[in-house]
Length: 275
Image 1 (cartoon, helix red, strand yellow):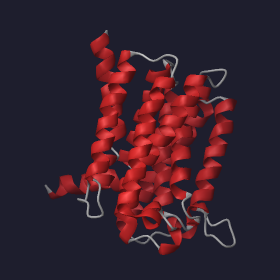
Image 2 (cartoon, one colour; image 1 turned 60 degrees about the vertical axis):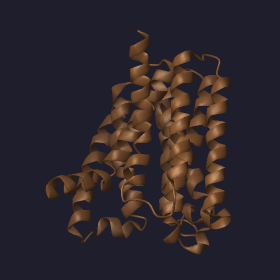
Image 3 (cartoon, one colour; image 1 turned 90 degrees about the vertical axis):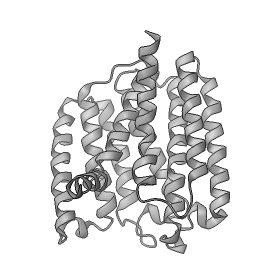
C-alpha cells in the first residue's frame, strides 16, 4: 500500500495528472470543433505540460531547478527533462503557424515564472494577475493551438470555445486559491484575500453560470453539447459548494484537476451513445 501511495504521489507531484487534464481538453476541443488534431501536437502538449508545470512549481527561481539537492525533487527533475526532450522532438512535425503561438505561450509562461521585473519577481507577483495568466495559457494551449493547426481562420465557434475554456480554468482555480489562502503572502492580494472565501465562491458561481450560458451562443450547437455542458455545469457548482479552506489532501490536487478528464469522458460516452 505504501508503494502504491508513493507512485500516486509522484503521479501528482510530477504533474502527470495535470498534463493528462490538459491533454484531455485538447481532445475535447477536437471533438467539439469536429477537427482532427495531429498526434504530434497531442504528444507535445502532454510532455511539454509536464516539463513546464514542474518548472513553474519547483523552479520559480531558476537556480533552484538546476541545483536540486532533494532526491525526490531530483527524480521529478530528471523525469521533467526527459519529457521536455520528447516534447522537443515533436516540434519537428509541427507547422510554422503553431510555432508562432507556441512562442507566445512559452513567453507568457516564462514571464509568469522567471524574475524579469525590477519591482516584481515575476508576473505572478502582480496582484490578481496569476489566475488570469494561467487561464489564458490553458485556453491558448487547449483551444487555439489545436484549432490553428487545422483551421485557416479563427471562427466564431473557436472564439466562443476559447472564452469558455478561459472561464472553465478560472473556475477550477477557485479551490486552489481558497486552499492556499493560509499560505499566500498578503502582498499577492489573491481573490480570497480581497473578497474573502464566500465572496470568491460567489464569483466562482457567476463564472460557472456564464460558462454554461455562452454555450448557447455557438452556431453548431447540438444535444450532445448541451447534455455534456449541463452535467459539467452541475459538477462545477457542486465542486464550488464543497470548496473550503480546510480541504482533504487530494481534493484540489486530484479531484478538481480530474474534472477535465471527466468532461472528456462525458464527451466520449455521449458521442458513442448517439452513434
